[in-house]
Image 1 (cartoon, rainbow over the protein chains, first blue to last red):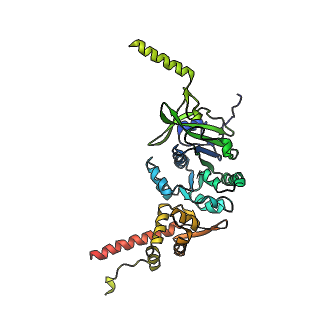
Image 2: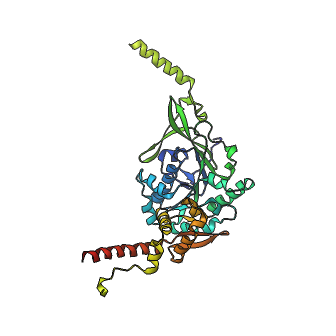
Image 3: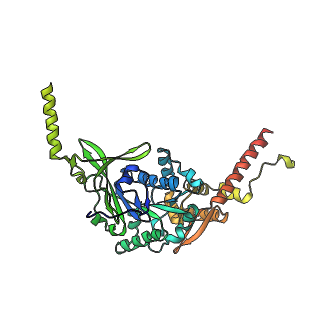
Length: 268
Length: 106
């Protein structure tokens, strides 16, 4: 079949969000660097934590969460709302939340000496970088790609599957542009999280924009943040223009709706 | 005062270091709440809403008592919590408080 990459046998890294893993045809490719982009409130941290916890609980892969701005005590507190006890996982040497400054990784910094202790302590195989946006702010303009490339390659060399969070500034509309970011070539996969306005309410959409070496679901799927974490639902098949943030119903659905309304009136 | 009337003692260095300065107590609290903090003096100070100079001596004191460890990352000195030593210090303080309670009862 054209445009379909055979992925049989390729080791996958499951996120633990069943419907999302199905969109990824079984999970991210092992060892890949994945960009998770979205504006504030879209659930990037929740997905990232679910990804780490799933690795710990299902395959025994140690996890590392690298945060530059958000204090770990806030992350512990927020995770508890989902029933995830991160401090217990740290005490069991399965997880480390590293709180540091981006300049210790970029420029004259050194990821090896900064992270070797935490990586060894939990035998980390999965890492979340929160966020790539902060990291790139600390590189000089000309060096952003080169410096980010160096850091991403450090994780690849350590055979770690990496989730890089990208904070999109725009809440609605075209909140993520690959060309604007300019770092898309560095990552193997890109997942975008978006708010969309439908019938005067805000809903959330997830889409896999790129997945190097693998087929993936091309549709925009609705998702919600529940008390147990993120749940992905069906695609917005009755709407078009989801990426714009203000979708409209497709013509066929508008026709069907008009027909249902007319039938309803006739029945009265 | 007889030997038995003496209040329970914490190891002197530890007591002086941890409890004699509010700045050091703030630092300890920051590291206890965020045990994965690895940063320069300036970076640690930023998390506390302070300037590096304001915490420099307290960081050095905690490092001298091995509660914090220091290492080189690139050209910078970074500090992080010595989890083993910290757990030991917490045990000592807990014992001290327990014994203090026992003395008061008798």
